[in-house]
Length: 289
Image (cartoon, rainbow, N blue to C red; front, side, top):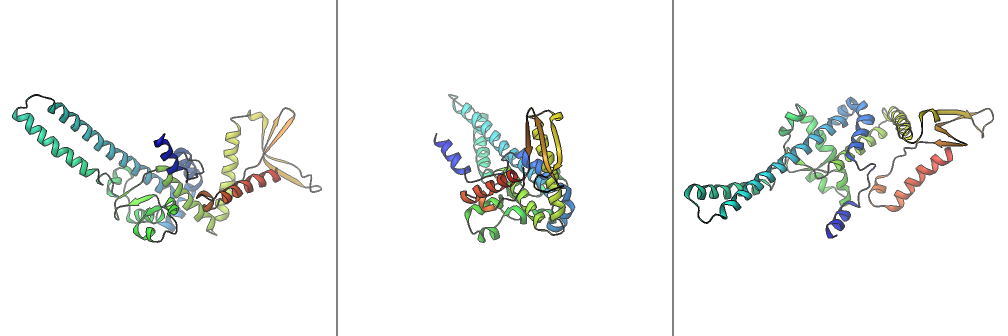
C-alpha cells in the first residue's frame, strides 16, 4: 500500500495527452515528421530524429543497468556459494577475493557509469552531429542553465533529459521525453507564421482520419459518411459540413473533431484551467454538431 501511494503521488501531477509511448510516437511520426527538414533547419534537429535518438538512448540505459544488475547478481551468488563451504583451498580463496573486487567495481559503476554518452549512440542511430546533439540538449535538456531559470519545479516536465555533462545524458521516463518533444515542436509549428496554416491543415486532416479510424471500431463502414455536406438550417440556401455522420437505425450520430491547444498550466496542476480547456473543446464540438 505504501509503495502504491508513493507511485501515485509521484505521477499524479502529470497529465499527458495519451500517456502511452506508442501513441505519442505515432503522433510524432504522423503529425511532425512531415515537417522534419524545416524543424531541423530551425533547431538543429527535427522531431523524428529527436525521437529516434531518445528511444535509442533508453535502450542503452536499460541495457547498461540490466548488465550491471546481472553481473552483480551472478557475482553475489557465487560469493555466497563459496562462503558456505567449510574450508576453501587457495584457488577458491583467490576467487573470493577477486569477486569482492569485482562487486565493488560494479557498485561504483552504478553511481553513474551506466549513463550513456553521445558517442555510445552512434552504433544505434548512425553519425550524431554536434548540431543535432546540441539541438536536443537545448530543446529538452535539463542543464545548469535551465535549472537556474526555473520559475517552478513542475517546469522540469519540459526538460526531462538530464545531462551530467555536455555529452552524457539520461532520462527516467521515456514517455515524458517524447511528450516534451511533441509539445515543443507542436508549439513551434503553431507559433511560426510560415508553418502555422500548413501544420493546422495537416493536423485537422489527421484528426478527421483518426476519428474515422476509431469510429470504425464501433460502426460498420457502410453506416459512416465522412465530411457529410447538407443544407444549413441556420442559413437560407446555405450548406454546412460535419466531420462524420453515422446513420444508425433511426438515429444520426454527428461527430466533430476539435483540437484546440491546451495551455501548459492546465497540464501542471491547475484544475480550473484544465476543466475550462476540456469544457471549451467539448462545448465547441457540441455547438457545431
